[in-house]
Image (tube, rainbow, N blue to C red; front, side, top):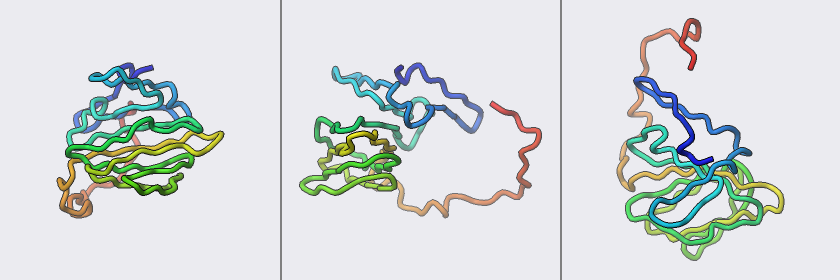
Length: 158
């Protein structure tokens, strides 16, 4: 299955897509449009959710596998949130362990790669890419409360 077969449900102020469980990520294949390269277990969410400020992907890597190349970015920092499995992450000449709960930020200039060191379990993670230096404020300053009673009764279900 490719991500083009996924359909988002949308409303005036939202978009939602169901990818299934992390153990089902292997069903997705990402094909890079500019090079003949296919990645199994990767879904980008920018187009699916019509994101305007970040790119997010959900990913998995089979046991014993490695990302087959180093890469870095021109303008975006990346935040990796590991949600399953274990492995090793390399940035420039530094190597450190990763596992469920590890969060890694990589500057655009950081040459990086990682691998799954498990013999049996997939490594799963979420990556958030955003323009470096584009968010100088704190999240708490952007949100505000609304004087409205919370109710789950009589709401439209999608």
